[in-house]
Image (cartoon, rainbow, N blue to C red; front, top):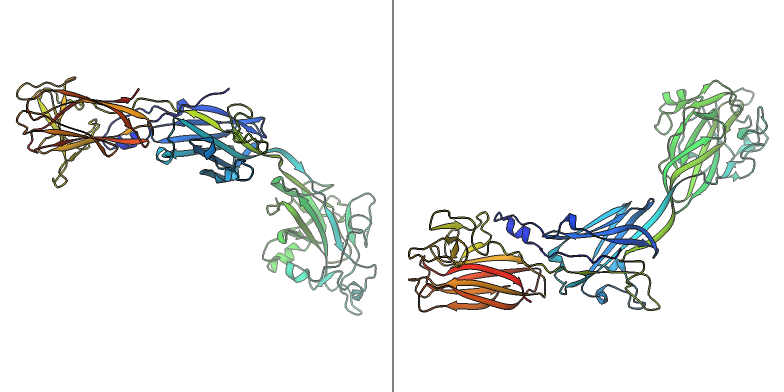
Length: 559
């Protein structure tokens, strides 16, 4: 649905009047939102743009409603004319990165809010406002994948002679564990993709059709001696790719044939991208008592139901979640340690859960699909914009008839600057006057002079001449009409009145006859240059506590 937004221009009145206690109801609130579709890829509606305002701020919210869509960036331009939207000099295509307002999101989000103070919109000088709202979006689906693992293992020959296995296995004394990743990597460089799982070089039983790796009896034997507690360390290495458009939420290893157990005989040490993930085995208790492996505690293997790869030995439980995988190429390195006789390892698979991003797009807010376009030339892209038509509201001048606060049955009362519900700020005309300035409100004076309108009027000379002013919400470049009634006071010794609009003197009024009488003045074509305009009345003449009367101040749009 095509809707024209109403940008209410109460502007900063609420903040300006908070200090004097005036309650101001905003013309635009969260309940007055205007909605515009957000289109990805020019025609897919994925959410909407909300626009509203209060007395102080313009609010623009991006909302993605369709499942699987999220934002990584958003950009917002607020200008007078389409020609002011930043574009490429060569193609004239919109350049969102150069928009005045922008946000980045990490992690990505489905909602984003801009709060823009009205004072930041000073450049808006025309009743029609142009808003270009853009977001970088992506769509994802939940998907589990099993990356293709490219396996290799360290080479070794059939010969059990130690010398024949140089640079094939890494020999340690005792039951191992007292090595680090950097210690062994220079030795285990001779890798082959052949005979990794099944049909490997082995010593011990072989069970057909079971994915495992077994290896020969080959560790250091002293001349003429027997088993001396030495260990052989071998490497199984897999490289795999995580797609660039995949966000990993969970990553775990698994053994093809088993749940809740990890077959191994004797020890294994698993590194992911060169960080230790876990270790354990039949000799874990011995290694743990010596300080563990790289300062960490391993899981002790137990023997129970037969694991055909490992003569019944396994680590209980599951592999821990992997949290250091990256998009792109990764590596998994499994070091297996043989302490005696033959060893085995169940084949490992990697399982990923996460989000697969199957679509990356730009999204633009528009009235309808493709309408209107920022650039309509042949080189133009599909970037769109929204036209706002300002709602021209009457300015919210407060207490223009000076009926608040009520003086009750008293003929007059004086109120200091900042009085609740006074609406006007009050200052001495003479800047050297000490203390807080007062505004005098009257119902009737000593000679029976009555207000022009209503029950009360103001006198701009309480104990000395004062000036009163308000910062009124206006719209830039809009014409306003000001009307008011004023009177000198008998005995005021030629009182006078000056009127200022946006800091400029727009009228001076005196009456030398010195007779109390209401004079009505109407000023047209007062142009607001900004979104907040100061209206001020200032008494001129003798400051003697008897001065100019003012009543029934009205500020309206000028037809």
